[in-house]
Image (cartoon, rainbow, N blue to C red; front, side, top):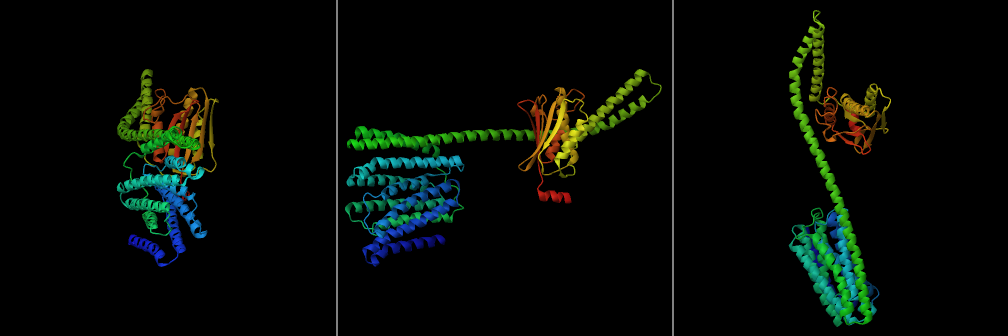
Amino acid sequence: MRRISTWVGAAAFFGAYALAPRIVPGIQFRIAIGDLAPLLVASAAVVLCTRNAVGSRGPTRLFWWLLGAGLTMWWFNQAGWAWFEVIRRQAIPDPFLGDIVLFLHVVPIMAAVAIRQEAAGEDEGMLASTLNVLVLLLWWVVVYAFVIFPDEYILFNRAIYSRNWDRLFLIEELILVGMAGWAFFSSQGPWRTIYRNIFLATILHTVSSQLINAAIAQGTYVSGGVYDLPFMAALLCFLGAAIEGRRHLNDIQVLPPHPVPKAKLASHLAKLALLSLPLFGYWALFISDASARLQNIRFAVAMSGVVALAFVVFLKQHLLDRRLVHLIRKSRESYGTLQRLHTRVIQQEKLASLGELIALAASELDYPLSEILASSERLAGCSNLKSDQLSIAQKIGQQARRTRELVNDLLSFAQQTPGDKSPLDLKPLVQRAVQMEAFKVDSREITLTVHSQDQLPRVHGNSNQLLQAFLQIVENAVDALQEAGGGHLLISLWRDGQEVVLEFADTGPGLSNPERVFDPFYTTKPVGKGTGLGLSATYGVIRDHKGQISCHNRPEGGAVFEIRLPFMKVGMAEAAAHG
């Protein structure tokens, strides 16, 4: 319904524009209507294109900015006509600076029609698309300065420059008509309606321009005459495109796909534009039959265009190289993240399957070990045993107790059930773990230090489980420092985004195989000193607390364990404490 009312309004406005000069007599009224009515429509189209650009994003935003820029340049040309003919009541000067603006206003509209979804939403991609538009604009500026400008402003020759202007403008508009038609037939949905209006507008504008230029050449053109009717219809079609864009603003955030590779096409066009300018210079010096002054001017214009286009092309290539390096870096980071996630999944599967096996085996071993230990104790308590028999009984009991401790470790590893959690301050837990381990350190060459930011947020966790996890990492670091003959362990705590980070960095010999540190039963300690389950259990505790744990070797030597735990929001912490 709104679309019908829009078309009815446009038809009524067009009818009033066509009939008013015929109803109200007077040449000045006709001129005023012929200049001010198109200026009003162009103003409305520019305002709507600007609003569409502000409300859009990515390539769609660039489309509306470019279309608005082309219509703005058209508006300035029309404002020049209104200034001379309506305000000052003078004839349009010849040459007229507005002709340059009118000639170049087609270029941004060309660029807008040529944009497709391949113009990425990233900043570098949009900047490269903008540079493509700049290459196109510079090339047409050079063509205008090469073909028309010398006869228009240096050696004034009205017949030659008018003929060249008309021919060159016709070529430019035919190119735009072809591009708009191609965009119309290759699109669908709301974009097809927008491109249809632009296609009709370019056809009508081409027809009106040729009629007006022919009438101006014959001296029969008057603003507001019959030749301006297709001109006004073209402006109304551009306004209709802006209205359709405003109506479907939320549905057209993605441009239609390009039927050919846009990046290659834009690159080839930039190369052709750059290579064409030396041919212009060659023609000006060796083929043209113009005067020596014109030859030198045109050669200078061509060479200046080569310099300007070469700079833009090289700048674009530089930006594309930077973007390629950025994409390569992002792909490497993504690959590294994928590897880490894959490792975590494998680790979780290992822990899950191994936990079930260990729980079953440990429960089966607990009863016979208890019987062996009780029997060995009763046997050792017999008074009629010889000394060698007593020694054997004691060894049996000793090894049975050691095996039972191992079974208990296995059970504690397998039964990693979530404990009760409450808001916790991590710094006191870390300090307690350091104090507990410091009592075991005999060497004065080993120092343990805790460095923390003030006012760290609390985490939601189980104090006993986290204490055991921190104690396991500190104990492993102390063992490594004892093997190295001394060193330093620095434990740092700080806030990073939505997490609290704990870093355990020692100056020991480092990790021989960081990728396997959290694997169950992997240990580098001597036989009988470690089971290889401590860090695996620590890994499970941190994962149960929705955190992450990782390790690596420092370039200067030593190992680093990093734990990241999400902290509680203020409201969550108060609710948990209240509960």
